[in-house]
Length: 64
Image (cartoon, rainbow, N blue to C red):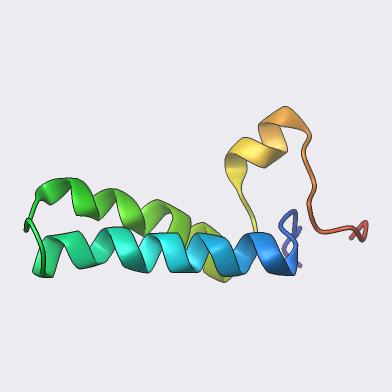
């Protein structure tokens, strides 16, 4: 069982940001910095942010 520490809105924003940053790799300025978008995309898809765990943040609203 995976501990979720991201709420629904947080996850949607992370996935959107991740996809937006990844688009920089393929369209737009075509910069390698777009690969940074993998981090918010993956954390948004799995619902767990390691940095949130370290800082004790939980935007999920439900203790799991």
